[in-house]
Length: 313
Length: 211
Image: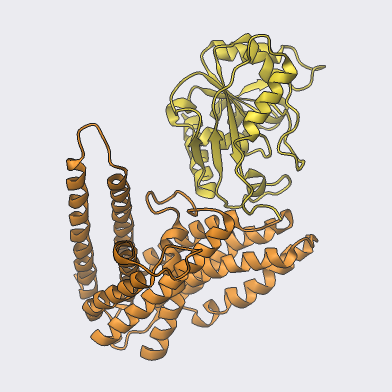
């Protein structure tokens, strides 16, 4: 077994131990509830933990399969996210073809470019070419009502759900300074620090959060965000050995990713508030939809990708 | 056997594209004899309802569908009668040999649940529903013990508008409301109005959708 595989297994094992602890904690709380009753808070917690198990196992398997597994996993996540976004986006019958192209042509092409390592194309394909092409397709069907609003929302969905998310597996194309195949571990690093940052922000914000950042949008507090970013930095520092950043660099990258991600969640909270929905869908029990789970990853991915390339590339 | 396999494949496709979900708001997902009456905007309505029914309920639920549509090609003649186990009725009074209501009541007497679209045709207007045909009232009066369940299929007119070939991946929800029955002495128009209101009440609030 090579070192990369060994490290992936080691990291998975570490997360599994954590999840086992959380599961036991939940079962312990369940056991304290009188027979024949259920405590909704405990059940909600267990539902979240169960979904975490599914997500962690899926990601671990994809990473063990290698680049193909990771790219397919993120392509599917993009598809699920775009499906949720378009459900609540404004659209007209005239947009049918351009939206179908977005889902069934542009999305697979973007991930194909990632797989082929065509860095030049994958960074301009959606921001430039899809940006120009899809409004043309919509215009050809000749419906002018709210045209700019419709095409702008479609483009926003493409940028968020396909482009930004595809920059996570695009980290595979990063050439490690030592020439090894360990760039896949960068993805594990990135997802772990962003998700742990989210988790700490959520629970710390609930425990001792006072000042809300945007009271009309979300319950996120300044205290919670600081705790989340600090936690991400500490975890990032400990995980520094799987990155080329060094310990201090890894902590800084983790803090940067977590901070961008948390602000991204705020943007998504604004969109959901505007659309009058609480969750994007029901597909991940206890978490809401794919977009609810991925909002911070989506915002953090481009920043993490570019800083990695510019500073260590 | 082949029909069952195709049935599972269709349900899987529907789930992949629309992540379709059931909202059991007024009834429990248990095997009780029911007539699900639904809004009709797209040919995919019936497969959606069929997909969200648990398998044991699906097997005893038969969609009521138009014979002229489902017998048109060999493929449709396999999917309609074999996969969905449709109760096929002839929409053209001049050509038909048997009374559609008799076929429907016969299916009910055999213990099947039914899916029907009381608007009769796909709704291409901006109104939420077309006026209901009398069929729902007639079966409700002939078999008063059967629950009539309003069933709203949301988003489908955007997933697959008439004339489009490629379905858009959007999330679809099927909402089941509280059952209604024909009341003692209630006349046809009053009942159909009440049924239509019960169905429209399940429609989600507009939160995006068409510009």
